[in-house]
Each structure stands twice: as C-alpha cells, then as structure tokens.
Length: 169
Length: 258
Image 1 (tube, each protein chain N blue to C red):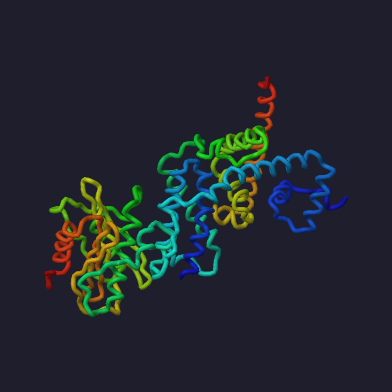
Image 2: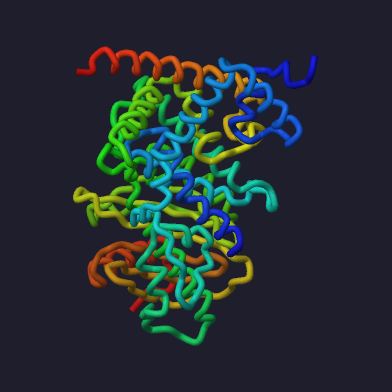
C-alpha cells in the first residue's frame, strides 16, 4: 500500500506542472489536481497493480479537465499565466525572455487538443504511445495534433519576429 | 537513393522527441545536414519544446500548496492510503497526539482506526468547494439505498435540522477493509459536519460512545455490530456532543450515552 502511495505522491508535482500549463491559472490548476487525486484514491481498486501509474493519473486528470471544460463552456483561449516574465528563470538576455513569453502567447492560441498533446510530449516526455493512451486517441491522431500544433506555433513565431523587426526602433 | 533521403514528417517529430532508434536517428541527422528547410523546422520545434519546459519546469520546484501537500506520517502510519498524499497535515503529523477519552478494554485499536478515518475523511472532503459530495441531498433516497447496498448494512442519513444543519449529500470511500461512506451536512455559516460509516464483518458487539480530538477537529465515534460510526466537525466538544448524541440516538436507539 505504501508503494502505491509513493507512486501517487511522486506524480503530484508533474500533475501540477501539466495542469498549470494546460489551464493557465494556478488556483484552477491545483483544484484540478486535487480533484484528480481524490478520484484516484477513491478508485484505487481500478488501478491494475504494476501498470503505468503515471498514465493512469494523467488520464484521470485529462478526463476531469474535459468534463470541467464542457461544463463551463471553456473559453477558447488562455488569457492569464501566473508565471509572469519576472518569475521566469534568469536568462542572460531580455530577448530570450521575450521569445519564451512569445512562445507562450502563441501556444495559448492553439486549440486545446493540440496543446494537451504538445505538453505531454514536451513536459512529461511521454512516448507517443503513452500520450495517445492518456488522451484516448490513436497514435496517428496524436501525431497529427503534434504536427499541426508545432507548425502553427512556428508560423505564429515567425510572424511575430517579422512584426517585432518592423516595430523596432 | 539512401535511407536518409526519405524522411517523413512524423520522423522529424520523433527526432525532436528522441523517439527514434539510434540507427534511424543517425540517418535523419544526415538528412537534416543536407536539407536546410527540414533542419529549420526541427530547430523551431526544438526551440518550442525548450521554451515550454523553461516556462513550466519551475512548477516542479514549487512547494506544494497545503491542499496538496504530502506529509509522511512521522511515527504511526495512517492506513488510509489516500490520506498520505494529501491534504491532512494536522492528522498526519499529529496521530501520536490523539487524545482518546473513556476508552474501555474493547479492541481499542479498531475503534481508534474508525475515529481516525472519520477525521481524515472529514479533513479531505469538507474543504471541497466544487465536489464536496458525490451524490447530493436531492437524491437522498438513491444515496442512502446505494450506500446501504455497497456497505451491506441498512444506513440512514440522520436529520440534523434542529441544530441548523442540513444534508449536503454523501460519497462512497474505500477503507482498506472495504467500502465506507460519508454523509456531509452544512449549516448557514457553511460549517460542515460529516458522518463516517464503515463496516467490517469481523467486528461484533457494541462499544461505548467515545470522543477524540485533534486540533480543532472533534470526533465522536462508536461501533455497533459490524458497523462503525464517526461524527466529525470543527466544533467544540459540548457543541458536537449534542449533535452526536442525537445521531447516536437516531441510528441506534438501544443503549444511550451517559
């Protein structure tokens, strides 16, 4: 039993990171994680011992998120992010920071299924199979979400570069 | 035509994500060396990925908020596995401080377990704003029938209206011995009382009505036959006692607490 507990506990920071990136707002993200943990604990008997705890927890989190989003007619884009520029890790130049917040701005405009796919791959470094399991989609669908998401980001970023150049003093 | 000349879109992503085997990885790298457009894409994907990681990896280092904080029990292990990852700092830290009064020679450990579980379940679910219960009081008949069936004992949700508390609803929980149930009540000041019920076929006989306290949380608990009860709230002992007595009387008219 304590092994199970350990398996869950070690995923909490990871669930929070994913939820924060998916939802944007810190309080909402932590509520989501708390709901996820509660559900996991109350359905522990459905977890097949020895199987992938991480995938199981992320699946629960993802489904809860979908339900919530449905219930609140989720706003299409993210508007806030609590990690503001000043709390970003210290980087040598201001340009780097701008680029990172630029990626965030662009990222938050992607459709949610693409964001979810990209986050599982980028943050959790899940295999394509594992991420497809979590999102309950075929691997082919996952790959196309990743592709569309990355291409769209790339276009938005290069447009932003152009705008930036034009507006520079 | 060599293998490195044909690289699919999917393989460019797999290259970025480290999901190619070594041989193929080398071939894709060769391909990139001679295909600047593909190389540029790969570089952009890598930069996106790095930016997301840079943005959100700091969350891993943040201290957990109290609602999610994991605190290991220091000495006595709490058997409720879900208590561990959570929520219940004061219980986890303070098990050894449990003050149990009027304890008789019956199986103390089992009873205290009931009290602890009741308190832990109270601490986990009463702060919930959105989902304090699984089934709301609107469906009380269904709730009671469902929980009775799962626990294998006829349950009732006692009336606490005379104390200003009304039923919010209930939920099914798991104790390590089997299912458990929690009924939640709330008054106008949004104070919450929970009634925890657990069954264990190994239990028999009836215990006295007992009291335990941890910090602000008071628990009255007792076991009757195979059913254990715990009624928990952040109320003073005399305040909760009046309510707990009413519950005790309603659920079990026979022996009255003194």
